[in-house]
Image (cartoon, rainbow, N blue to C red):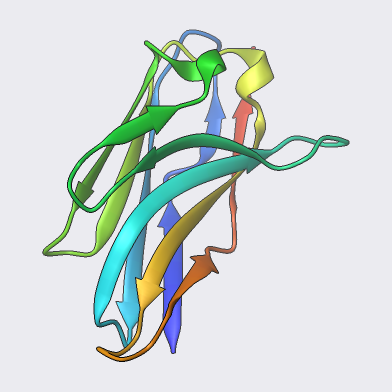
Length: 121
């Protein structure tokens, strides 16, 4: 089976930085787009950033210029570098990956368990 394991969340002061990592493991034939979503209390889950297999990126307007996303295909890992963090960035951050588990199978979306990011003084 496929697992996505996130790390790097925590408590940080406004203006600080955090780096999230997400590693995919298991029966994986290929990985398409990978990304990060977040969900704050009482709000819907929203896209933060995504990166295609070829390196194309897309960001939510609220994080443009502050967050960057990258991936290491050899290690099946996606990273989210978060700079100049604001209290409104506080949320549970979820990793997402579009994965094919065999050469004849369809792609499916997989999710990590989530990691808490809290921005507070």
